[in-house]
Length: 119
Length: 110
Image (cartoon, each protein chain N blue to C red):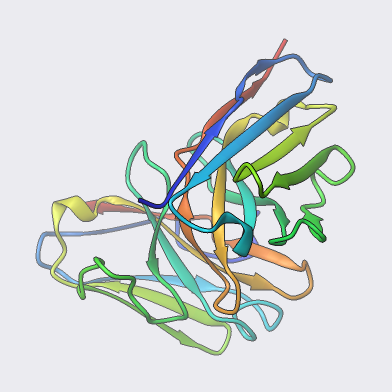
């Protein structure tokens, strides 16, 4: 079964850091671009970051550029999101999602992990 | 404010046909294919329609998508209570160099 499972969320103070993980299983992880998408509870979906299949190229939304870093370990089938200098507005559920290149859509989503930035 | 514009809400009675619109620009919908995601309460988004009008395996043919110019729409026929969910359109934006979403439409089955 194709599956993505996020972990690492929690409560962190403003200015703090957190590292999210996304464990992939049931498919050849190294062949896919992967993304992070977040959702403030009760609000819409917002793209955060992407990383190409071999990790050679990354991209970020302006709102997180310079503070967040996406990476992956293809040997361990795991995607990461290092989040630094966190702000209250980063509070959201963070989803990892698999991207189908060539057709340009997310075909598999994880269940998400909640990040709460608050003092 | 989302790059793609959707109505915040839609509603219908069981058996009815409902459509949800999604408006963009030449940088996104006008150039790239549109996808739709369904998010049931308390769950992760699920791919509903890809490449404007294609259904993944397992998605009922009651769901259909279309695109014209810089707009797209999702139609749900034979509305059922289990269709009550949030629906999001999405596509690639060439100016932002990333995926963009609509603000979501909350569908209520009366």
